[in-house]
Length: 459
Ligand SMILES: *Cc1c(COP(=O)(O)O)cnc(C)c1O
Image (cartoon, rainbow, N blue to C red; front, side, top):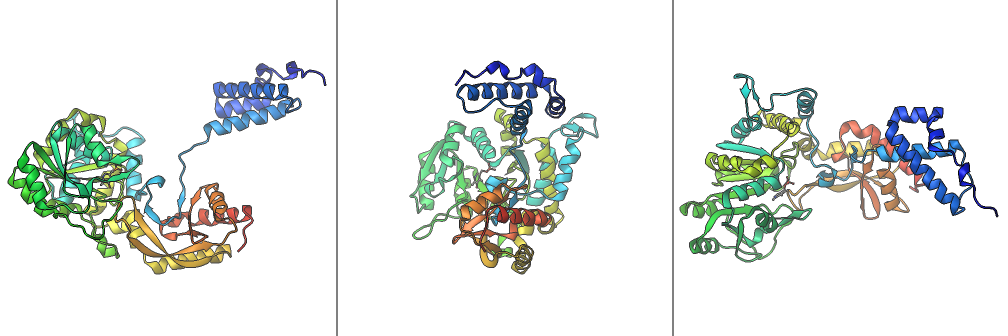
């Protein structure tokens, strides 16, 4: 066999001057198209040398160029259909926003906004004001501060109030929330020193009292066990007992609620999750929680409580590094307004999902099964997720799809547009209507139909 003639490959210049190339340049821009052409030619040269291919036509080359370009510009952050039944799914972006919150984001981001501009005086204003008044009004707290997320809120509060000093916490609360976020690590990073008391299953009020008497404590902390439960031989003082003790020694109490609900969860057949208002009523001097868990808003970390403590935290240099952006502030203010106007259950998607009657879910699942002419409607359980109400579920009805290879069917569902995320339960693929937004029903049915066709399912 003779040597491959590499010079028979067209030059970049020749590819660049074809009509098809003009279309690619219009779509992707010249520098990127050029880079894709160089890569394509290099690839082909190597493959020719290795005798893996015969000489490609310019058409073939340009098709490969387009393929490379498509891969480079393909978005990775995509909307998906959440059919897992996990309402606050951290990997799927936690809380979907209300219509009002979405409008607020659009309103302040399409043009300029009064983010830090006082429209009455025409002078510089404060970004902190937008959500602060609403938070104060809803919770009754003296002051509020919004930062990037709850991890940042906690880190900032500890750095501002207890750097170099001891923070007292029960061993029952040294939790890892997920993604490597551990209370002891956060304390270390903030410069505060961890003073743990009690045992893993039991902490007594005397344990706290003894540690306080030993001295050097600056803050008493409590962290919500967001993602696990302790059962069996377990006890710890309640928040009111803890704050009374701390206050006798002039120590503030920081309560990391994690999820931070403003509505009573037991109204929806769930366990009672400590509410933000209750934590303040129990005497917590500072309460921090997430914007995108049970509040149902954008990613944010919310700190509320004593005005003097909030003022100190706000002045700390780290506050600037973790401040909330205007999109989050706009969405948060709109979400908080739903609570103020007593319409949270109606307007905020996660509360709509939590409060949906199982009969309605049954109807939707039946409609799915009838339209697809596939699957079976089965009783199942939805979860709140997102570090709230661990182990607690809501009864639901789901569409169960039989498949020889359920993993493969799940994969086919993930490759639809929009991607559909389901779960496997007892060997079947389960799709839970509770977390599928009503306006996504059409896309879901189309996607499931495609996936079933592609995976050659057997019903
Ligand atoms: C979720 C959670 C956090 C972290 O909140 P993010 O908003 O995700 O940063 C911190 N503490 C507790 C107890 C949590 O549940």
